[in-house]
Image (cartoon, rainbow, N blue to C red; front, top):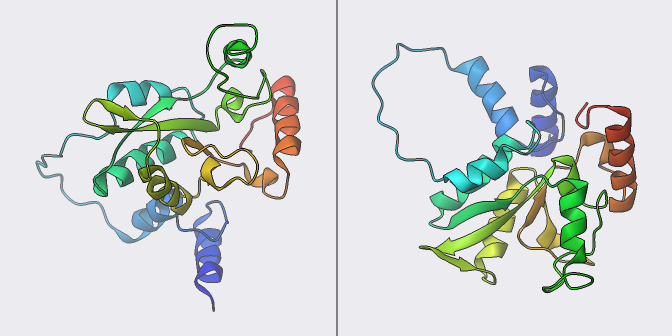
Length: 201
């Protein structure tokens, strides 16, 4: 039996999302089943690598995405790379303002997506920045290393896209959208928001 098949069976038995990838949700469920609660001891935890700015952006994301964004920051820190979440959910108006840059507003073009055409508008996407000290690195080979970590967590990485490559971008594709194109998924996301339907449900 292949590892992916084994993981799928374990996920099914635990009642978590069945995708064949052992991400944080799967490991958390396994932990709860196997490890029995112990008497609490005083434990001094190291400071979290998730800085306040990142946490503020993460808090705008849907609850299903938040732990994965935090996990990515932690995994990067384990590999000696400092990342910060620099963008989370945007309103349609905020997206339109970004789209206007370099077109009808000052600045360089930063996006080809209008309001309702970006996964950032639905709480499922976030962008990261890599930092050395306080210096932001807009271009670095470290983005590829972080991309691999993100995909291991089950996130979709913009750096692996074939048309518009977006290395700082990560998103969590809902199960119902696994076989959809980006355009089809965005249309369904808009419909779900308009109807008040849960995005992850």
